Image 1 (spheres, rainbow, N blue to C red):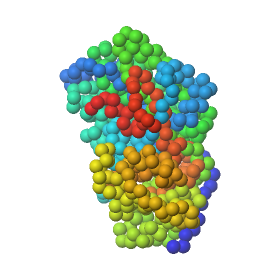
Image 2: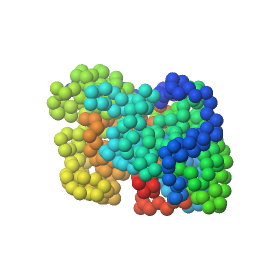
Image 3: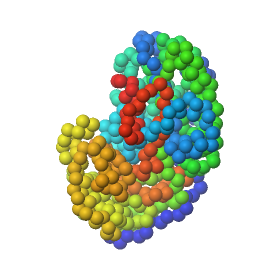
Image 4: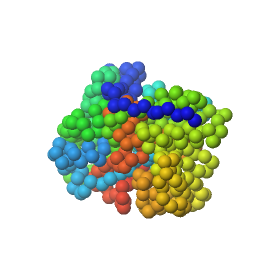
Length: 484
Ligand SMILES: [Zn+2]
């Protein structure tokens, strides 16, 4: 095909990266939620559902959206978050790893359903429905669908079935929770004005109220809080920006009364099992590649449906296209400097196209415990040569995590198991394109969604919990401590 160049330019001005701006303005205009309101509502719900008193220590889960390992380490080194450090870090910093794609919606769903990405329907921030309709979960109109789709499997629902209770201090993810953070007008205005600390402070305030004012025997089994400011600022200013550091210092101050309360409760005999992690890491994005423009200017490729999700895009080809035509476009796209690679599912194979390495990953039915398949990997010469050897090896996904460095060193760690899980999903797209390092198909200064270690790895802080893991622990396994 006659391919033109995928144009790249410096990242433009910050843009509105999430689109729930009208969220609070359009829905649930409760005038002002006071700190005691969630406490009263929770206690009422507890009695209404005749829930059982909680016999195990309550679990408190902080999801700091977009908190990268490097941002946290910088803040620790500069002593910007002393209270957070004192509360969590008696031991060394542990690492977690996200599912692929390293986007918010798939990862929070995986965390809240304790399932890898192929076992739930939220495989992107955007997905294509069976009716070929684009569902963008970042849009507030889709919040109902998001919660409807995840409801059967959330830890909240599973707790409710056991007559245990939970609180979700999250405007997006709450299906099955006994009580949730309600929308209000002031938060909507704060969001529009970029005042994320107002929204986060409000959630922290609700949480502090519940921890401080609910009597010990009524405490929920799970308190989940989703803080959004770090992610928003990392997109707008970059993950390594001074603004993100200043925000972390602000969060530390806002969390201090809560930490003090938790320490006091602990000494009084009510220890909380506390976790803090993130849904994904981040990559600085200096370059913006016009993916839609490339497709528009490449003849028949203009017919391809593109779901642009920042550092990756899902691709859906017209039905009448042959596999050969599809592969030709994907190979041509993989040669663009702004692209790291393209991948497509073809039968029971995943085909990887990149300048230095082409490879075929193939599923084989097997009982691998955590997966129902093994994956074989066959390397071939890349689109611009290189790739040495033609070894073909076959392992269970977990074994791949340990041995990938022996067989596919040039691919990011965990690549085979993560892509294997993603393309095993029944909701998978036909193909995806991954942006090159420091490049985004969106317009943000920082972005994520790709497969690099920077995007995969997240910090995992904890108190009163013992986590067992050789390497970085998959974050979707963390809430298994609830033993549901
Ligand atoms: Zn996120």
